[in-house]
Length: 170
Image (cartoon, rainbow, N blue to C red; front, side, top):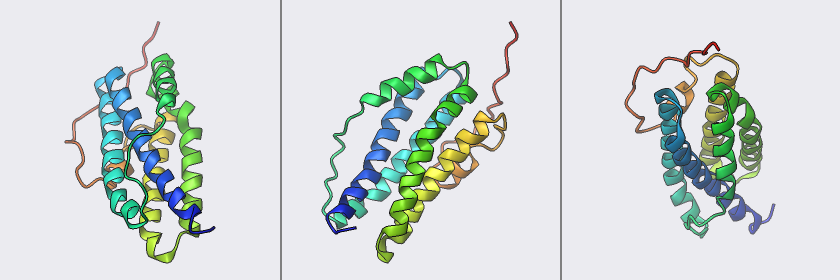
């Protein structure tokens, strides 16, 4: 890895948070239930807080703080949610996307300079928390699915009692 590559990888971390924030906002707009809205709101808060934590890191390396990125894939993911029968089905469908991000973040954490290791590892925890949420939701184990995401937050959303979705019978 050269010095030129490393800032580009830092930018990649930031862009993933910009994308995640835009996605969460779009999903909140079309949420099918109060429970889904709370889950997407928690995702939004995680992405926003993480994006803010990354700014000093970006600045340190002279990486642009701009948020102008390609968000064209947001619409397709929102459509996938709208087409899914429920959050469980949607979560199973987007898990591979998050697994790819996690793999990339783990790679960055392995090769980054020691002085940046804490922030890189925090990104791995961040993405792992999202993956745990999706895994628990997609495997019918929703209770506590947000716990790791909430644990990463400095300012979590107020807790509300949101019961798992009930399966409707035809």
